[in-house]
Amino acid sequence: SVSLRNVLFHAMKANRSFHGLRLQQLYYDRIHPSDAGHSVLASAIAHLVKHAALLDLAAGSREDACGVAEDPLPPPMQRRLVDDSQPRVQCYYAKALAGLVSSTRCDGWALRDERSSSGVSKPGYIATRAGAACSFEYRVASSSRRHRIGVGYLKSYRQMGRVRIECSGRCSCEQTLIDAHHSLAFSPYDLRYFSVSLRNDSSAIGAAAMCTLRLTVSNETSSGAHKFKLTALFINQQGERDLFGRWIMNQAIAARQRPRGQEARVSRRSSRRARGRSSPRDTQ
Image (cartoon, rainbow, N blue to C red; front, side, top):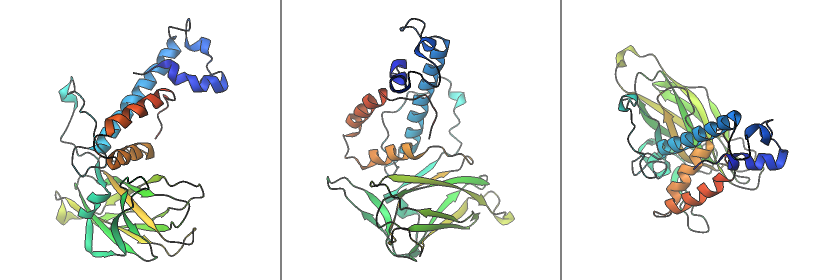
């Protein structure tokens, strides 16, 4: 459940206010929220619903989906408001990326599982030398004139390099450079979005378009090494929106990496922690 007190607690303790509002402005009598308090509570509920919906979208129902889906939501009360015919975001977890790899155009990259010290599976497509290049091919509807690509990758403070991303086939995009090195002493997953456009091709009207993403490890490096680990690809055919950010991606991938049976237990622990630091702000 969503608690207004939990939403406000940390900000009130630190600043004696919540976005400029004092406690007396958010409650009538320290029990019943004021109009402003109800507005904050409504935003917190919307925030919770959005995160749950996007996490379910990232998880999907296929075995090779990026995350592990929680219990399904009940059917919508107004079915006519849900259009299942519209394409949804496509999510390719590390192992599912193998289905996109062009075997004749992939050199220096390999699917490897770098298990943690506790035995947690952490697979990804990995390259370790400059010049290593690999092409990933995917299809989009010809009606998706512009779509959004999300690249999930490992970021770390040592041994990481840079990768250059280019588009070909029926698609074009501005060249994107991702630096997987940072100075902080931890190794999180990160997410980079960029836009892709379909080339005009009158001979292929109505047909699905085959697009290619070419990842090449750059000679330039800020760490002295060239490792790059691709963990997931997200394709949003519905437009140029970033449907979810790094938090959702991390939750989906972490759920995918946990052994079966642990999802519900971890989810309950996460929910208890989140109730103490929930924020109604809509952040990615």
